[in-house]
Amino acid sequence: MRHVLALALSLILLAGCAPSQPVDANQSADISQPPAQSQPAVTPEPEPEPEPEPIVAHLMVAGDVMSHMPLTNDCYVKETDSYDYSHVLQEAARQLELADYAIANLETTLAGGPEYSGYPRFNSPDELAYNIKDAGFDLLCTTNNHCLDKGIDGLNRTLDVLDGANMPHVGTYRSQEERDGNHGIHVADVGGISVAFLAYTYGLNGHRLPDSKPYAANVFNTDYYTSVSNPDYDMLAADMAAARALDTDLIAVITHWGVEYRTKQNGHQEKVAQFLVEQGADLVLGGHPHVLQPYGTITAAGEDGQERQGFVIYSLGNFISNQNFDDPKKDLATKTTAILDLELTKDPDGNTSLTDVRYTPYYMVHRNNKPAGERRHLVNVHEAMAAYEAGEETILDKNSYKQLQLALDLCHEVLGAEGDKPSE
Image (cartoon, rainbow, N blue to C red; front, top):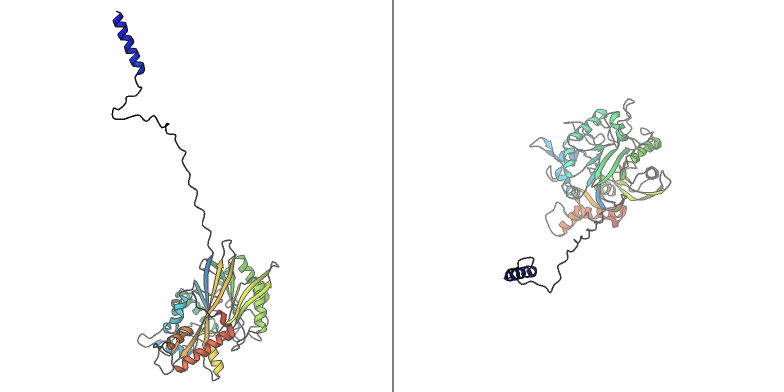
């Protein structure tokens, strides 16, 4: 019995000394390290929000689009019995590719052919609208002293043709409803910057709007069919108030004004420009004199009494045309033009301003000894001169090269040399 008790006691003692978990004979227990502690998850630092970038856009502005009969005839394509202005516009088109938005003044009607005409009552082929669109323009001003050259029917058909070409327009209207919509204001997205465009002319070459159709053209003088000297400030103020109410980033007013063939603005232009800036215009873009006139900044007290500034160019001259004069200075001035490049910047706080002004000189080269389709070219002055100086094959001869030199000097004299720099 003692043996049985001793055996039982031995078994109990052995059981008390046994490990609680079986040990693999091939493993050795590491008793030198403390048991591993669980570590809290590390939360990565959030990436900092990138600083918002300003929006930078380029609005390009050209002068008067006119088609005197020598130019119209040069654009006639006999094989297809149609018209093509693309060879005239091809050099300007290369620059306009860099624009976020481009505008010009259409100083002719598109009243239908085949009886086309130049000065004094313009009527051009429909193809002009399509070629202007293809060249890179996004908006045409249609109110000017020639918009009634073919009457109300011609004015209306011009708008119909532009609509068919998907070419937006501002300044003339087919109905009171069109004029009443936003007070005839065209709002555009200029590379992410909203701009309200308005357009006005000083007069209509003595024509009067029908009493039943006062809406057809925006005219800013009350005496537009006589002395053209009394601005309708009430109408302008109402339209500018409507533009401000649209709450766009900028307001641009296209104006047809001034005295033809003078390379400096007059007091009437300055007075109207000052009023427009007071009323909220940020850009005042002028035409009509057929020659270049200066640009600069106007300071005025705004509607809220705060000082504000606006940019004005009094005239960009002709864009495409066929004017010829015996007076060498006048002839040069009407063939010399520029594309204005306005850099617009909207900062992260939503404030928008004009941050750079530059221009590119152009010249309308006439080559009357060439066959149709090769006689008229609007050339980039710098590019054409550089090609000629390099001995490349160009449309220039010795005489036309000298004309381009004179055109460049004229641009610098009127617009200032500091703005003559290529678009980027």
